[in-house]
Image (cartoon, rainbow, N blue to C red):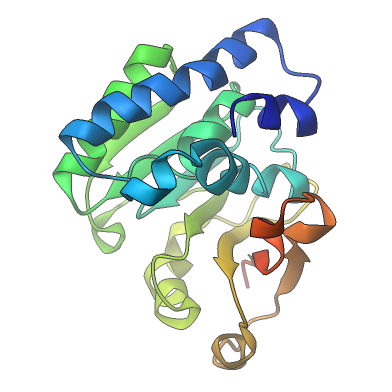
Length: 209
Protein backbone atom coordinates (compact mmCIF):
# COMPACT_ATOMS: atom_id res chain seq x y z
CA UNK A 1 0.00 0.00 0.00
CA UNK A 2 1.24 3.48 -0.81
CA UNK A 3 0.70 7.02 0.39
CA UNK A 4 -2.76 7.15 -1.22
CA UNK A 5 -3.95 5.27 1.85
CA UNK A 6 -3.15 8.33 3.95
CA UNK A 7 -4.81 10.70 1.49
CA UNK A 8 -7.92 8.47 1.58
CA UNK A 9 -8.48 9.05 5.29
CA UNK A 10 -6.98 12.54 5.52
CA UNK A 11 -8.19 14.30 2.37
CA UNK A 12 -7.63 17.85 3.65
CA UNK A 13 -3.84 17.71 3.87
CA UNK A 14 -1.87 20.69 2.61
CA UNK A 15 0.49 20.23 -0.34
CA UNK A 16 3.43 20.30 2.09
CA UNK A 17 1.87 17.61 4.28
CA UNK A 18 1.19 15.45 1.22
CA UNK A 19 4.81 15.80 0.13
CA UNK A 20 6.09 14.89 3.58
CA UNK A 21 3.93 11.79 3.86
CA UNK A 22 4.97 10.73 0.34
CA UNK A 23 8.65 11.19 1.26
CA UNK A 24 8.42 8.79 4.21
CA UNK A 25 8.54 5.70 2.00
CA UNK A 26 11.96 6.40 0.52
CA UNK A 27 13.34 7.78 3.78
CA UNK A 28 12.38 4.74 5.84
CA UNK A 29 13.54 2.27 3.19
CA UNK A 30 16.89 4.10 3.12
CA UNK A 31 17.40 4.24 6.89
CA UNK A 32 15.92 0.83 7.61
CA UNK A 33 18.53 -0.75 5.36
CA UNK A 34 21.22 0.76 7.61
CA UNK A 35 19.59 0.65 11.05
CA UNK A 36 16.76 -1.84 11.42
CA UNK A 37 13.83 0.00 13.05
CA UNK A 38 11.00 -1.72 11.13
CA UNK A 39 10.76 -5.47 10.54
CA UNK A 40 11.51 -6.58 6.99
CA UNK A 41 8.02 -7.98 6.50
CA UNK A 42 6.46 -4.70 7.68
CA UNK A 43 8.50 -2.20 5.68
CA UNK A 44 6.41 -2.85 2.56
CA UNK A 45 3.27 -2.13 4.59
CA UNK A 46 4.78 1.06 6.02
CA UNK A 47 1.77 3.25 5.26
CA UNK A 48 -0.79 0.89 6.75
CA UNK A 49 1.00 -0.71 9.72
CA UNK A 50 3.05 2.26 10.88
CA UNK A 51 1.92 5.59 9.45
CA UNK A 52 -1.86 5.18 9.36
CA UNK A 53 -1.73 3.23 12.63
CA UNK A 54 0.09 6.18 14.24
CA UNK A 55 -2.53 8.55 12.85
CA UNK A 56 -5.23 6.60 14.68
CA UNK A 57 -4.53 9.00 17.54
CA UNK A 58 -5.69 11.84 15.28
CA UNK A 59 -9.10 10.14 15.08
CA UNK A 60 -9.37 10.47 18.86
CA UNK A 61 -8.05 14.02 19.29
CA UNK A 62 -7.20 17.04 17.18
CA UNK A 63 -4.30 18.57 19.10
CA UNK A 64 -4.59 22.34 19.46
CA UNK A 65 -1.61 24.55 18.50
CA UNK A 66 0.97 24.78 21.27
CA UNK A 67 0.20 21.34 22.70
CA UNK A 68 3.28 19.48 23.96
CA UNK A 69 3.42 15.73 23.29
CA UNK A 70 5.91 13.14 24.53
CA UNK A 71 6.34 9.97 22.44
CA UNK A 72 7.82 7.23 24.67
CA UNK A 73 9.71 4.33 23.08
CA UNK A 74 9.33 5.93 19.68
CA UNK A 75 11.51 3.38 17.86
CA UNK A 76 11.87 4.74 14.33
CA UNK A 77 9.51 7.62 15.05
CA UNK A 78 6.05 6.15 15.56
CA UNK A 79 3.58 7.54 16.34
CA UNK A 80 5.48 10.83 16.68
CA UNK A 81 6.67 11.54 13.12
CA UNK A 82 3.30 11.03 11.35
CA UNK A 83 1.55 13.06 14.07
CA UNK A 84 4.14 15.83 13.75
CA UNK A 85 3.45 16.06 10.02
CA UNK A 86 -0.29 16.23 10.66
CA UNK A 87 0.01 18.76 13.51
CA UNK A 88 2.79 21.20 12.54
CA UNK A 89 1.88 23.65 15.33
CA UNK A 90 2.30 20.99 18.05
CA UNK A 91 5.64 20.23 19.73
CA UNK A 92 6.73 16.58 19.80
CA UNK A 93 9.51 15.15 21.99
CA UNK A 94 10.40 11.64 20.80
CA UNK A 95 12.45 9.52 23.17
CA UNK A 96 13.90 6.03 23.00
CA UNK A 97 16.55 4.31 25.10
CA UNK A 98 18.35 3.08 21.96
CA UNK A 99 20.53 5.71 20.30
CA UNK A 100 20.47 4.13 16.83
CA UNK A 101 16.71 4.55 16.73
CA UNK A 102 16.76 8.20 17.77
CA UNK A 103 19.39 8.80 15.08
CA UNK A 104 16.89 7.57 12.48
CA UNK A 105 14.21 9.84 13.94
CA UNK A 106 16.56 12.83 13.84
CA UNK A 107 17.56 12.15 10.24
CA UNK A 108 13.99 11.63 9.05
CA UNK A 109 12.72 14.76 10.81
CA UNK A 110 15.63 16.77 9.36
CA UNK A 111 15.04 15.48 5.82
CA UNK A 112 11.37 16.43 6.09
CA UNK A 113 12.14 19.86 7.54
CA UNK A 114 10.06 19.20 10.65
CA UNK A 115 10.79 22.02 13.09
CA UNK A 116 8.40 20.64 15.72
CA UNK A 117 10.26 17.38 16.45
CA UNK A 118 12.99 16.83 19.03
CA UNK A 119 14.50 13.34 19.28
CA UNK A 120 16.48 12.22 22.31
CA UNK A 121 18.09 9.04 23.56
CA UNK A 122 16.68 8.85 27.07
CA UNK A 123 14.69 6.79 29.50
CA UNK A 124 11.38 8.44 30.30
CA UNK A 125 12.01 8.10 34.03
CA UNK A 126 14.97 10.49 33.70
CA UNK A 127 13.12 13.29 31.92
CA UNK A 128 12.48 16.47 33.89
CA UNK A 129 9.89 18.06 31.60
CA UNK A 130 6.13 17.67 31.69
CA UNK A 131 3.72 17.50 28.76
CA UNK A 132 0.06 17.72 27.82
CA UNK A 133 -0.05 14.20 26.41
CA UNK A 134 2.08 11.08 26.38
CA UNK A 135 1.69 8.86 23.31
CA UNK A 136 3.16 5.43 22.65
CA UNK A 137 2.79 2.26 20.62
CA UNK A 138 2.65 -0.81 22.85
CA UNK A 139 6.11 -0.55 24.40
CA UNK A 140 5.04 -2.59 27.44
CA UNK A 141 2.01 -3.46 29.56
CA UNK A 142 -0.05 -0.48 30.57
CA UNK A 143 0.41 -0.75 34.32
CA UNK A 144 4.21 -0.28 34.38
CA UNK A 145 3.98 2.25 31.56
CA UNK A 146 1.61 4.43 33.57
CA UNK A 147 4.04 4.22 36.48
CA UNK A 148 6.79 5.64 34.26
CA UNK A 149 4.80 8.52 32.81
CA UNK A 150 2.30 9.49 35.51
CA UNK A 151 4.33 12.48 36.69
CA UNK A 152 5.32 13.61 33.20
CA UNK A 153 1.86 15.05 32.47
CA UNK A 154 0.82 18.49 33.65
CA UNK A 155 -2.74 19.26 34.61
CA UNK A 156 -3.58 22.41 32.69
CA UNK A 157 -4.51 21.79 29.05
CA UNK A 158 -6.26 23.43 26.11
CA UNK A 159 -7.55 20.39 24.24
CA UNK A 160 -11.01 18.88 23.96
CA UNK A 161 -9.77 15.87 25.95
CA UNK A 162 -8.14 16.51 29.32
CA UNK A 163 -4.39 15.88 29.39
CA UNK A 164 -3.36 12.24 29.66
CA UNK A 165 -2.03 9.15 27.90
CA UNK A 166 -2.95 7.97 24.39
CA UNK A 167 -1.72 4.40 23.96
CA UNK A 168 -1.88 2.40 20.73
CA UNK A 169 -2.36 -1.32 21.38
CA UNK A 170 -3.91 -4.36 19.72
CA UNK A 171 -5.44 -7.67 20.68
CA UNK A 172 -7.51 -8.68 23.70
CA UNK A 173 -6.73 -6.15 26.42
CA UNK A 174 -9.19 -7.41 29.05
CA UNK A 175 -6.55 -8.80 31.40
CA UNK A 176 -4.15 -5.93 30.90
CA UNK A 177 -6.77 -3.27 31.53
CA UNK A 178 -7.95 -5.09 34.66
CA UNK A 179 -4.57 -4.16 36.21
CA UNK A 180 -5.16 -0.45 35.59
CA UNK A 181 -6.94 1.35 38.44
CA UNK A 182 -7.30 4.55 36.41
CA UNK A 183 -10.36 5.48 34.43
CA UNK A 184 -9.86 4.83 30.73
CA UNK A 185 -11.67 4.99 27.42
CA UNK A 186 -11.19 2.62 24.49
CA UNK A 187 -11.41 3.76 20.87
CA UNK A 188 -11.56 0.94 18.30
CA UNK A 189 -9.60 1.88 15.20
CA UNK A 190 -11.84 -0.43 13.17
CA UNK A 191 -14.49 2.28 13.61
CA UNK A 192 -12.30 4.67 11.62
CA UNK A 193 -10.22 2.52 9.23
CA UNK A 194 -11.65 -0.30 7.12
CA UNK A 195 -8.46 -2.33 6.51
CA UNK A 196 -8.42 -5.77 8.26
CA UNK A 197 -5.17 -4.85 10.05
CA UNK A 198 -7.17 -2.51 12.30
CA UNK A 199 -9.77 -5.06 13.45
CA UNK A 200 -8.21 -5.46 16.91
CA UNK A 201 -6.26 -2.20 17.08
CA UNK A 202 -7.25 0.37 19.68
CA UNK A 203 -6.33 3.70 21.22
CA UNK A 204 -6.53 3.59 25.01
CA UNK A 205 -7.06 7.04 26.51
CA UNK A 206 -6.23 7.49 30.19
CA UNK A 207 -6.79 11.02 31.56
CA UNK A 208 -4.43 12.37 34.16
CA UNK A 209 -5.80 11.84 37.64
